[in-house]
Structure formats: structure tokens, C-alpha cells
Image (cartoon, rainbow, N blue to C red; front, side, top):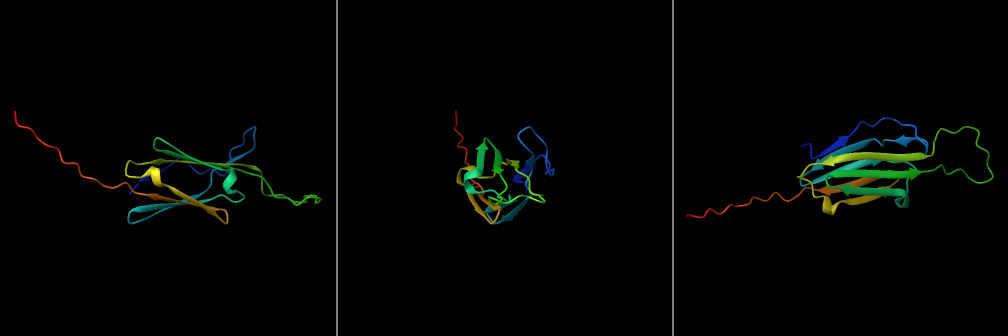
Amino acid sequence: MNQIIPNGSPASSEPTSAGPIFAPPADILEKGDTVVMLLDIPGADPESLDITLDERILTIMARVTSAEPEDYTPTYIEFRDGTYERRFVFSEQMDGEHINAVLKDGVLRLTVPKAANTVKRINVKAE
């Protein structure tokens, strides 16, 4: 339990000079020796995603822009250009070297295996 902990709360958006920063909602599911993270990032594409793992902090960022057709004049716009950003802290039980990321229909799916639970035997020498 608690192998992956969200860092910060998923506020709807925070304004910055470069546009709003959205915290995508996330679900974290566990099954056997795998943890699956699902993040809702509408408008993102694989090229706009930047996923890094520094020490035990997983950072997910994506820049999104609206896809307005050319030669159209917007009359009502709710979708805003901006950046998605979310951080998670991994426990030592997670294998950060083998994360698999797939983006499909605006949902980012990260599959994170748990680290092998190894028991180390300590040899005792007689003196």
C-alpha cells in the first residue's frame, strides 16, 4: 500500500504567465506485482508529453493547445491552452527503471512494476 503518493493536490488550474497549469486527475490501481496509474490529459499527444523520474519523484508534464479548425471564428470556448503537470513520490518498493507509458484517447496509462522483494542473507564471521 502507498507505493505511489501524489505530491500536491489536483487543483483545477493555477494561472501563470505562460497560461494555466492543470493538475490532471489520477487513479492509482494495484494488482499483484504491478501498479497502474491512469491520468486524464485531454488534448495531449505523445510528442507533448514529458515524463521524468528523478530519484523517486515522477513528474508528468504535457503542453496542450486547442485544435480549432482554420477559417473558423470561435463563438464559445471552454477548452483552454495550457500545461498539465502532476508529481508523484515513489516508494522504494517501485521499479522505476521499467515504467511503461501509453497514451490513448486522452488517458495516460503508466504501468509500474514493483521491485523484486529480495531477502539478503548476512554472513557472520567468527573472530
